[in-house]
Length: 239
Image (cartoon, rainbow, N blue to C red; front, side, top):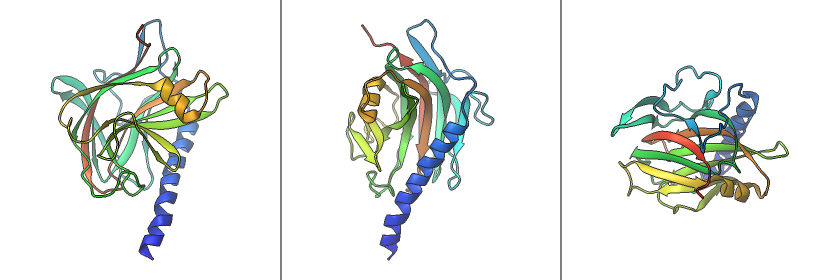
């Protein structure tokens, strides 16, 4: 009986969380999104500049779930690198920046991250019950018809390899890093965001990135984690 209730409860809870993220994200439209200039890249989050964690200013947000305590977010230098630190303890939230950036012009998403404390759990990350990762980026696109498409880029635990996709109830996660081999090190990443958009949306149009954010969680497994993020940028493709 308990197992049957879990089978029903966890998928409904997961869908409710996704619905809450989408609802608040569409209600709280930005008045100060990051936009592109004339240069070859757009800095969406600059870890060396003061970031408004406690009271997000226009264009910033910190989404907190009704049934979850938020991650702790602060700013410091880690190994000499300006960084945003996210600490979780059976908690989860999403912090980031609204944007309006042409992904066809700036298709490369680039950032560096470090996991200091990974998620250690016997629960399977391929299930809703085990769906925790020490570091994620939550990204949302707007297509040319005004539709929106969300996805996450994750540091997986052990069941995936970089370049693979994880799907939970059709929600896409792109795996950029995995496992504990790189724990304690800064890892520089680049992904082709336009290619990811076209795969998850099955569209061939010109999208805009409208949200780029940091998401750390250990709420399902009841564990804890520590991760760091440096600058997050959108870049032109190298010639």
